[in-house]
Image (tube, rainbow, N blue to C red; front, side):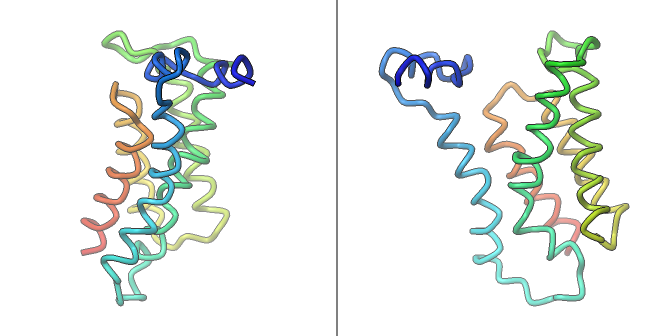
Length: 150
């Protein structure tokens, strides 16, 4: 069981291979749930603002769709890394943005300009961050949605 589990560890979880705590998996769950918590805390009542409808889904959209698609495309097709020594690739970032934007189009999101702007900024943040992106990306997405909805 342990050998099966260790193939899913990344460089941030190197201590988990020796019996430590794997924080990437925990932050993934927290990152997906955080927008739901913020939605409940903020208790936005302006239903006419379409960005309010995006807020609860930011974590799943960014991590479940975008980050996953970007990682797969970056590993499979990525050949142009971002400057600065990043392991992320332009192809992975492009796939991340396109997959998230396509989902917004498929669900009939009304304000594609604001939604696309949020997704573009989050995609650029993902390409440049060396932190735990499972927390950084949903926090950025939440912040941008709240700022643009105000």
